[in-house]
Image (tube, rainbow, N blue to C red):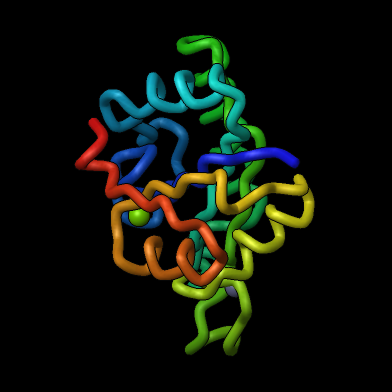
Length: 152
Ligand SMILES: [Mg+2]
Ligand SMILES: [Zn+2]
């Protein structure tokens, strides 16, 4: 089995500018790339779990989001010698697309990652900046949750 650190994206890895999708607006929160680097060197998978309702709202496309993630990972590789191993996202918004199983505080995305990577949740960690990150993590069986501002 593997172990993972689950990171929220906006407000945890990058500065939350609100529905971020423009590569030129991407700013890492100071200290977070180094945190990713350290956990990955310790053998944790680095997995991003993110609500992206901007897609349901029509503010940006799935493709734009995927491009942003590719650029994020390029920068982590080039500038910090590390990377995110996988991105899981919820593109929905209940009011527009109906209820889904993946929008945090629901645990769907964590459970998808668990299955895909055979992750031992009891050995894993979750890091976020909001209560729904914590609620989703705990619902998925991840008992170690940290608010990013307590780690950096
Ligand atoms: Mg956040
Ligand atoms: Zn969803």
